[in-house]
Length: 280
Length: 175
Image (cartoon, chains in turn brown, orange):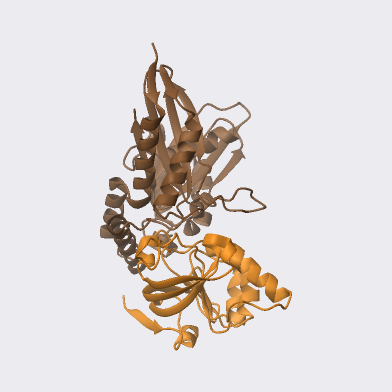
């Protein structure tokens, strides 16, 4: 037996979540900024965090986008194998993005061709990833991704004999070199394993996890903790102007890999962590 | 921390005497220019053609705003990563631009140009577009209209916060 889901229901939920993400910082992020403000004694860090906390308040109350870079919209869609959707899901998502960006005065930041660079005017197309799950539910994770931090992200192939310490210094060095330009405090998403595109996808998915939630595997959870500590000792700080809060979190996702390989992706997420999710 | 008030355009040259790490509150007119607008300006400079704005003694903000909703002067208007504009810095400073407002580190080579041309690089807070947009009291497209959010905008700001990251002697916050 299939469960039929009407396109309109999906469209309306998408419009709501994409809009909200652009104006309202998630509670866990707002709390983390406040917590950081309270532990910082570096003056620059306190100025920057104070402004970021006020920014979230102004964005919500005055309906000004959290960041002028209203990003590219990324949708992670999990489709239950008992679900039947009435309508073309790709079209529904792009229609919702177009509607939300035009109606809410969000900046259209997408150009149709990387070299010809003509703006599409409505921030479409969205980037969509599908995954088939067991069951009769349809789940969406929406991420609004700015390119200041996306530009600071990488995928690379390391050697399979790499040690734990070498891996840690690889990641910490990347944050050291690219963190200041990615609008810290950051959420560092890390994907390890799989092929090149799999690792990249994992690193981005890692940033969807709520801030206080650790990796399920205690080994990797401990690694996340260790990385966060080392990254926060870099003194990059909020806005890159010094302090102990370079990252609010480090999230790792892992996947099996080939005997010859060790794929690493680092997806930098700026402090404007704009996401939301829903299930039908 | 004490913020130093700078009234533009009258006190524009005071920026040259400031030191790395000083925080400012800017009042007055500035222009925006990011990737494509900077590239177009530099093309015009190289071809010795007319430039649509007076670059001498100006302050350029690397920013592309979100559209202003009805009843508001500006939309969200935070800085974009300035490092991408590094190749344009010597050309623009050579025209008498006093400085840039942006975010993030610059190349070592770029830092030297600030010394050579007595220019300054100010940073403001990335990710604070709503807060900074709220400090913009007037905003209108000034040139390169066809670039949309990447056009050159004329802006009037009030209490706009920024920190000196590279001073006119080439000293850098990042050493």
